[in-house]
Length: 143
Image (cartoon, rainbow, N blue to C red):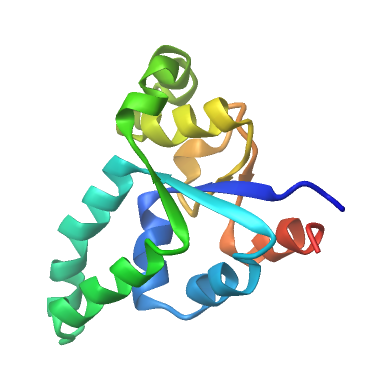
C-alpha cells in the first residue's frame, strides 16, 4: 500500500472549495487517500474574503461560511506554532513575489509536500505546485 499523499492548499483554493464545485469534489473524492493541509492564516483570509464574494454573488454569507466549516472537516488547519520555524527559508523562496504567502511555503517545506494553488507567485519557489486542472493527476497516483 502506498503512503498517503498530501497537499498544502492556499487561500484561493479554500475559497474555490466554497464557491465552486470542482475543488470540493476533488477534496471529497480523495479525502481517504490524501491529506490536505492549510495554514491557519489561509483559513482566516478565506473567512475575511468570503462575505464580500457572497455579497457580490447575492448569496447568504452565513450559508457560504458553513460550507467553509464543512471544508475544514477535510482540510487540516496548521497552526502557526508548527510552521513558524520554517519562516526564514519560506520567505527567501517566495520573495520577491508575495511575502504574505510564506506560511503556505513553510507548511510545504515542513511536510515535504506540494502546494495546490492557482497563484503564480508560488511558481519558481522551489516547492512543487499543482493547479486544479492538473491536481487530479497527482491524486490519482495515490489510489
